[in-house]
Image (tube, rainbow, N blue to C red):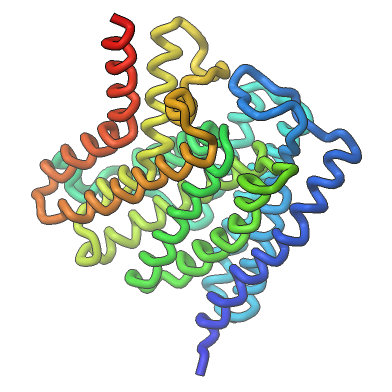
Length: 358
């Protein structure tokens, strides 16, 4: 006989997916009818008329999926977790819709992102108070942990937002992370991770179809990418805290946190480094992201997405395979894999082009 949690795990992704399948085509139709298209910038690689309001469907699907899960479980603790997450997601969602319809200034975005980050780490709470021996550091003062958690959330929200540049790229990455979170939730007995992870997969599945394969494409826009960025930080900080309580499941919690967000962080570090070297503002738009580099190799949007996602899965498998190493060496290997797997093909391509030209 199915238990309440089992019912929630079945219904939440199913309801989220059905809502997405119903809402996304309506968004596309209304976008063309009302000419609701965001102005392109130098970073854009899509045509002129692509709806960027897919985040509305993503947000609705997430909320409805979690509401159904809450009703199915009738667990007060889970309901409080969902309500707290809903409040934080609503802030970045409103920010994203606002920015999709009317481009906002950087300081306006950061203000609302900061409010969302503060509410997320305070309401759950998700404050890091122990680094688990990373670089020889264990317990840290609460205020330092709060500041560190705040910076992590703010950074990941923007890093995932920057991934949203080609078909399926940010969406499929978050699907992989959500599946990983659901699996870890099972092994860590964290019901909320299982439900939220599967609900995210449920709503992103129909979105990826319209984003990657439909004749009239749908982009998630800032309303979707900011929501997924906040979810990314939520998954990573939650898994980190659970692993701190149960280190026997995976022994290197900090390194796993790095590996899980390797794609957005390596991409962010790369573009910031390039922009600073060119004396340009770090928030300026360009085509120096990882996905742009792979597109320049001659890959299509979908090919680039699948190749980089395969590299992401390979990274996670290798980090798991090297679990036997001591903490210091596991950290070194993890960092080397993070940059080597994603940037290695780009460096090799540049070297080949250099030798061919010479």
